[in-house]
Image 1: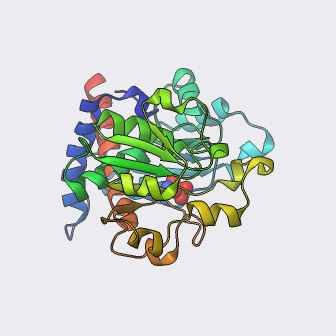
Image 2 (image 1 turned 90 degrees about the vertical axis):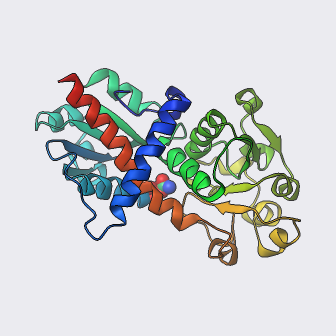
Image 3 (image 1 turned 180 degrees about the horizontal axis):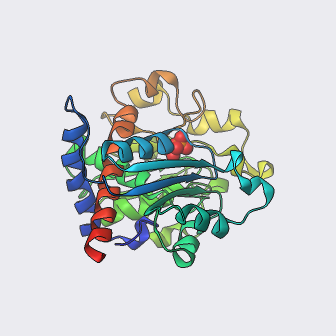
Length: 306
Ligand code: CP
């Protein structure tokens, strides 16, 4: 593929190729010399129109580990604040001979729009409440690393499904890799007709946790929320917060995931987030290898096309 715009556009084979490529890069980043020269002739611009800690730093580190030249752009400190459009912004950056643009943007479809309007390879680092493809790739990679395979595994995504790009990308990715997927949360935070994506819906947290092998806990996204129809934080914590007590009441041990940032004490207690049952920091570690794999495969395609 030329771009990474969403998991929707990938096949199972594409995802598995990214995962096997990431295996090689995971070995590289665990060596004393963590760098390879693979992208020495490639220039990458990281464009962040929305806040980020993990994705931004992880892409930048992935690019540096691959020896690419890297420039970083944060909308808050740029001429976007003077009214410059997205296409003008990107074309000005591309005039500096940039090959790949990694972009996070608050508008759903921003990556697709850009890919049709500028002459560069685009990697979607999160577009509004639409997709976050590298998060789903690293989440599915982390589950495979922990459980061996995704075929037949049961994964529940808990929380604010309605506003979550992580949820949508994970649903596409997990289904393509053969997992069974359930979403769990209050009816107000689950999109209508989500069953059409082939997922189960459960409003009772205990039943959902008892069903699954893996629970991916999502943050309640207050910044995308119409507060009038949300249950209160107190009600949310009571009904959907994962605690040691509820995990101990299950008849098995499940794997706990979270894409970050965590609202400690809301969707998950610190005791659970910091326990051996959680693979939250493994997800972050794997994010670098996954992003190296994505950039390496896109750059290889650029070199083949030249
Ligand atoms: N998981 C994730 O996308 O985190 P950031 O918003 O910090 O990048």
